[in-house]
Image (cartoon, rainbow, N blue to C red; front, side, top):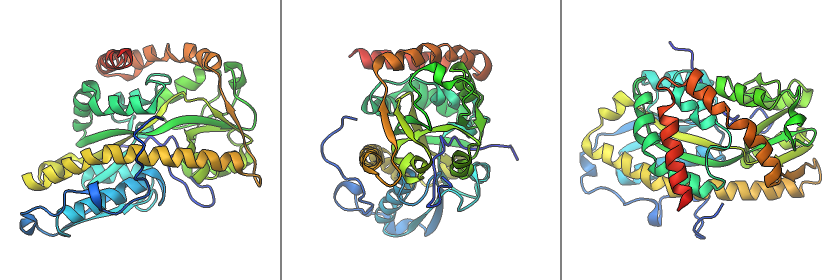
Length: 366
């Protein structure tokens, strides 16, 4: 079995810490199937055989990925007239990062939310999502690119399919931010800084470019690692930083917005291709519907948890928003890492990256 894993920019969390501009309507937190949540039971739902699908996530109950899986489950149940049961699993419910990808690949589970920090050791091109300052400085624009990019939804998908996996959608969980026990406002602040990273060679290269000393660590060990000083800092979306309680053991949170956390709704290819036409269409339609839903969910969670961090007087964390000039100093060091991706990571000489850059430039020029 391949030695694999999932990109957790540490997504996941537990009580003990073991791990912008959109339409105004907010349907976050609604994991039911009312209103626009589904098309209702199919006319031919009576023809669907009863079945159960397992859906593993990298996060815990209440966090974005798990909420996504629950909403997906509710919609599929309603559309199938209760014939199809989708059972979501929190991170750790069926094993660790490596276990989850292996189970998806061998068909023990049917669906998963994956991300490229660990899976990038298998699907090399997926590490494209770890490049800093690649996507626009807008989660809304980034989400639109993730929805429409040919480089991602066609070219990158083919790279996954070579390993028996099929991404059905890519979506953002919001901007990544840094936490530490000192301000990180310029690259020199990273000198000899023990930055927790995933095992992706590209992520390690990115932080070495800033002068940091990257340390690979599972998110399950991260709270303790931060508390005991095994690592000095980490990166994650705001909702995850707060829900995993990393802010309790970090004095500063930098609004660096150096990257988006991109998640992928991924299925076992053989299972997916074996579905009846009706059920496969049901899955596709539900995944498409979920794109707007998950955007609103991450937006609400990130906004709510930012306010919680700012107003937490028991374990105060100072929020530092980097200026554009400060971010530009990091950007100048991050852009050359794209050549490392092209030369050392990519199996297609960076063709997918170059095409994606063209798409991003076209989208942001409009």
